Amino acid sequence: MIPPFPDWIAALEAALEPAAKEGYRREIPAFLHHCKIHHAGASIILVNAYLPVAETQGRSLGGSLRQKAE
Image (cartoon, rainbow, N blue to C red; front, side):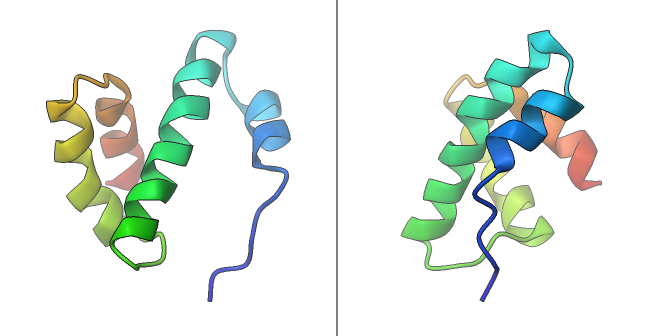
């Protein structure tokens, strides 16, 4: 089991540029929801499967996540 990370929003605030924060704040819960509905823990493999879904739904952050996953 993957341990919870309850302070991810605070960590995000400290680590990202202001312009990127809101996109990640939306995209991370969307990815975690994707994990939940597929009954899988977050992983690079699942990120790579999720990115095409995010991109087809018009979310531009998919490209940023793709760069992080590679």
